[in-house]
Image (tube, rainbow, N blue to C red):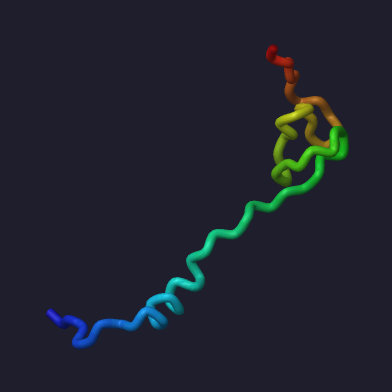
Length: 61
């Protein structure tokens, strides 16, 4: 079975890994409460989606 003859340098290894970085998830502002939320999802703070109340949010003490 073939094996590498030489060890790869740090710069070649890092060039290969340059595309592996994670990007931040996209966010948008809720039109009702102004909190940041994921697009196309129900707002976790006020429970609205597309202007309708979908979830009833209760405040915990």
